[in-house]
Image (cartoon, rainbow, N blue to C red; front, side):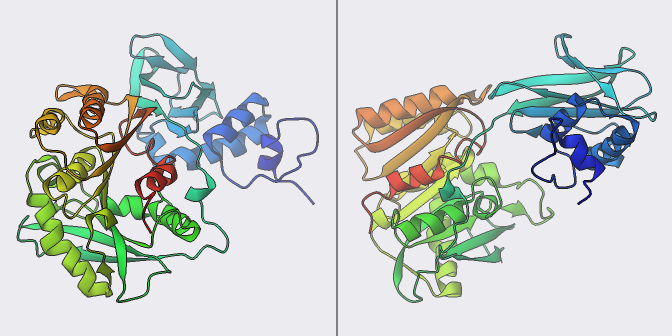
Length: 403
C-alpha cells in the first residue's frame, strides 16, 4: 500500500509508520513535521495544509490567531520579511520558519500547562498581529465519552419568546430526556444556565453524555435536564452575545427563579409530557461564572424548590451585588441546600473583584454555617474547561443519596 506524502512527513522515526495519519494538520502534527526537516515537495504539501488549518483568507488578511492543541501552540503569518513571535515585554518567544516562497511562516512550541500570555508578531520591526494564549489542558474520563450499550437520551429544543418576567427577549431551551424515563412518571430535574453548549454531546461539558453514563450506572437518578440559554434582545441575531445575560444572571432577588417556575418549567412539562418530583432534594441547578451565581441565587431564594447547586468559577464579586453572599450566608438562617463549588488559582482578577478570593470566602461561609458543601480547587482559568472533566465526579457527589 502506497503511503501519502503527508503520512511520510508526519512519521517521527526512520522506521515504517505503524499507523496511517489522517489528512490534515494540527499543531502537534505540524510540530512533528517541522522537526523532520522536510524537503521541498513535502514543504509544499505542508504549506497547503497550514493554509487549511489557519484559513487562507485569515492568513492573507493578517487575522490568523494562534491555534492550540493540548499544550502545543502554533502561529502562522504571511509576510515577505522574516517574522518572530514576541511577549508583550519584547522578549522573544521564537523565530518563525518559512514554508515556501509566498511568505507563509510558522512557529510551533509546547508550553507548560496552565500558561497564559499575550503575544505579538512582528516582521522588520513592524507589528503584524497580536493575541492571547491560554493553555488549559485536561483529560476526560470514560464517563464523558459515549459508551457502547449505554442508553442514549434524546435532546429536544424550542425557542421561548413569550416571557413576562424578562419581556422583549428570546432564547433557546434544550431538554434532555433520558431513555429510561417513562412518559407521565416523575423524575428528578436539573436546570443549566448557558444551556445549549453544555448539553451538546460534542461540546466541552458534554453534560448529556455524562447524564447517559451516570444514569445507566445508577450513580445519579433518572433526571430530566433543562438547558436554558440567556435572553437575547429581539433585535439580536442568533449567535450574538446575549444582551440580557448579566441582568438575568448577576442580579440578586427572585426574578430568575420565578422565570423558571412560572414560565420555562411548566412549558417543558406541557411540551414533552414529563413530570418532576416535588421534593427539593430532587431538583438541582447548575451554571458557571454569572450562570453559577444565578444557580446559587435560585436555590437561595427558593430552597423549597431547588435543593442542589452546581457552581463553577462563580461570579461572587461586585457585579450587581453578588459580593454580598459570603456575608449573607453568615447572618441568614441555614437553608436546606447542598452546594458544589469549583474554582481555580488562575481565575479572574479585575475591577469587579478577585474570583478565587470570592470563592474562598464562599467556601469559608458555607463551612462556618455547616452547609452540606464541597469545594474543588484547581488551576483552571475562567470558563468551563476546568469543570468539564470534573463533571462526572461532581454529579456523583451532588446526587449521592438520590434514588
